[in-house]
Every structure is written in C-alpha cells, then in structure tokens.
Length: 511
Image 1 (tube, rainbow, N blue to C red):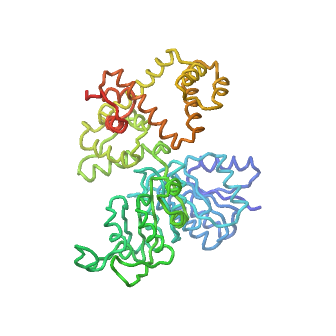
Image 2: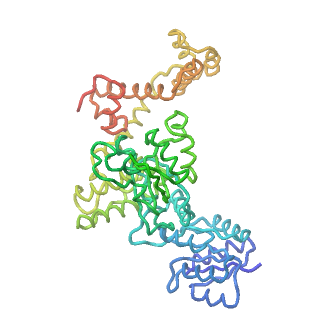
C-alpha cells in the first residue's frame, strides 16, 4: 500500500498525524507546502492525500484541482482552521473526499483516513477558509452538516424542504442553494406565503390576466413567471391555504399553471425550495396539509439547528453582527467582554440568529462605551439571568415543603371521582414515593385517567394547566405584579403577558 501524504505548513499538525497513523501501521510522507507535494506527484502518488487549505504559495484547493485532474480516483481530505460556505462548496465541487475543521479529534481523523483508504469513490466535502462576506457562519458540528448538505446539493436541481425554528436562517440557506446551483445566473424569487392574504396569494404565485377580478387593470406576472429558469423560495409553506396547495401540486407534477382568469397554460421551469417552522407531518395528520404535496416537497429535507444546538457559534456570530452593524451605521465596532459572551452563550434566545442579530444592532446603538458588559445589555436579558437564579431558589425552597405521596394523591383524585380504572394499581406501585416525585405521580395518574377516557390533545390540556398553575402561584408570591412574576419564573415580560391573556388568569397587574 502506498503511503498517506500529509501536506500542511504547520509542523505540529504533521507530527500529530504522522504519530497517530504510525500507531495504525500506516506509512506517511509529509510536505510543508503544496509546491513540494506537486513536484513529488511527478514521480509518485499517495494512497490518500491529506492537505491543509491555507498555506504559503499554492493553496490546498490548488493542489486538490491538480490532483483531481490527473488522478480522479485519489481521495483528498481537506483540513482547515476556517469554516466558510464558499470554501466548503469549492472543496465539494473540486471532488474532495471529506474535510476536517481544526481543531479536530485525532481519532476521528484517523477513522476518516481509514475510510478514505477503503473507499475510492469520489465524494464532495465542505472545507473552510475565511471569506470577506460569508453567506452563513458556523463552526459547530450541526452547521458543518448543513454546509455538507449544501455542497452535495450544489449541482442539483432537486426540490428541497428546509425546516427549523423561526430565525435560524432558512432563507439564507435557500439563497446559498441557489447561488451554488446551475441556476445561479437566473432569478432567485422569495415569497413568504404566511405574509400574503389568502385572497391575494394565488395572484402572487401565478399572476393574473387583465379583468380577472376587481382592480386587475393590467396583466401581471406571478412569482413562478418571475423565477423562470431560476429558483422560487416559498417560506412558511405550512401556512399555505389548502385550496392553493392543489394548484401548487399541479405545477410540481406537470410543470404547467394558469394565471388567475387565464385560459392559456404556461410552462414553469423553476426549482422550488420551501421552508417551514411547523411540523408538516402533524399538519398532514390534522388534514391541514395535502399528503401528496408533502411528499412532492419533501424530496430532500434540510434541518437547520436552533442556536441552542450550536452555542459555540454565538461568539463568532456576535463578532460578525457587531462589525456588520457598525459598518452600516458608520461607527467603530463595539466589543463584548468575555463574561458578556459567556452570558449570551448561556441564554436560550428563542428568536435564534435573528434575535442575536437584532440584539447586536441594539448594542451598537444603545450600549455605552466600546466594551460591552452584561449590565449594558437590554434589561430583559439581565432579568432573565436573575430570573433563572430565582427559579432555582424557588425550586430549592419548594423541595423543603411537604409533598404528597402518590398514594395520597390517588386518594385525593379518588375522592373527586377522577381516577381511571386500573390507576389504583399504578398508585400502589408508586405508593410510598414521598418527596419531589410525588407531584409527578399525580401527573401520571391524571394523564392515565384522561388517556383511558379517550380524551384528545392530552398534552395541550395538561400543558395549559401546568403553565396556569405556575403563573398563578408566582403571581401570589409577587402580590399580582406580573413583571416581578416573570422574573421569578425566568420568562420574559411579553411572554407572561401573553400567557396571562391566553390562560384567562385574573389578578395580574403591572409593576
């Protein structure tokens, strides 16, 4: 077997890989730059080539291009200290087998090299290098998987369904899929189906003829026509009205559609990418989304992780947004102290990347000084930190209070006639379990009772009761002051206001 070539200007990386591969009885040959490796290719070839991307002189991508032009079956693994989408796509399109982002786990690196030894198939991979204006930032493993998917889809016209919470960057991914596709020179048209009134959405999508309805004074091209030969991105597809889903299905099925009020079929050569934060499978089960359309859209599913799943990306996102915001306003970019970055990295940030970007815009305008401390953040974020500590304190205090056993809870439920058949045995099994688990046993009994009685939406019903009990109790502790109650519960002021209205809770007042 031929040796594995390692090309990296970092001597420590070469040394670590050499030693790790030697333990696996794998021969290696190392080069400090791409130029020497290219010269050596005139006389010999490796079994696998492992190359850094950023080196003095020729880059790893230059080496990759040369290798693939002369030795198409030779697996090339790209290693890098950076992580931007353009380099990732370039590596995939150049035919790289895989890539490793520094710092990498040496065992995983050896495992990958062994896989490359066993496989001669060319695969595309994501790799990294700093870009002046990166489309998507992310070094977390979850985001690297997204980069890999975009790279693998870069030369495809397949329909893609992007899922993920609001604010995770679904449109950015759709634009990246378009930019790195064969349709990149053609239009990219985006439409949020939830933002258009139902009566206008059909016209927005398919256009209308003159006189088709009141106010249609001229013929209008719809989004399908505007996106001809390009990409149409339909955001929040889960909110599309049911009758319009039928028309969309027809376009996806045979590629033809009619303008509103029109009689001439029009041909659509459009790649459709859709996105939603909703559970489409559940909407199909609820009869709110067509199953056949779901299967048409769900050819390739790309899930975007929430910011909670990629907390290690928060520091680089913060730096990027602060620089971006400062550039827009023509001011010097502010910096965050290490404590502030750590604080932000510990928050849930339900608005995800969009919320973080808005926060950085607020900081650029509102925070005093150039170095931002935790006390300089918006008050609701500081309160959230205090609220989390307060909730822990409440929980500790509550644990010291007497808690009913499961048997006592069963007796109480039996007294009110709400115990399901067979629940008595469950109560007996949990019987003497006093302490913090007692209320969980009560919950299990109530859930068992509701399920055995055939009640629907048990999760929603019990969830509302649970939230209502928490908020009512917190309001009692704060004498009805809802802002104070929000702090004690560790939720935002807007959230508790909304919950109070939804749950019909009385007795709350502003602080």
